[in-house]
Image (cartoon, rainbow, N blue to C red; front, side, top):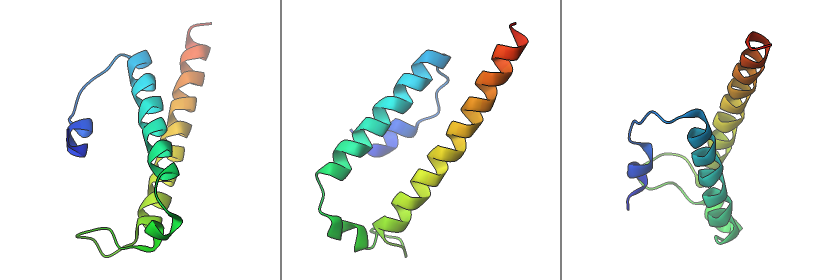
Length: 81
């Protein structure tokens, strides 16, 4: 399986989307637990930046979308009460 397969456009029910998010987060944590810290200082193949920068961007990306999810959840709760 290629990494790109994880990003093919698909529409999932809410609970499945959250489960998929949790699973990919767990995969990332497992990967990070099994690579040396020195890997973060290596350049990403085909890019002009290091793995550290890519990881930093990924974390910011996920936090941004987690905030969106929290806002949507709050809005849904308010609308259903």
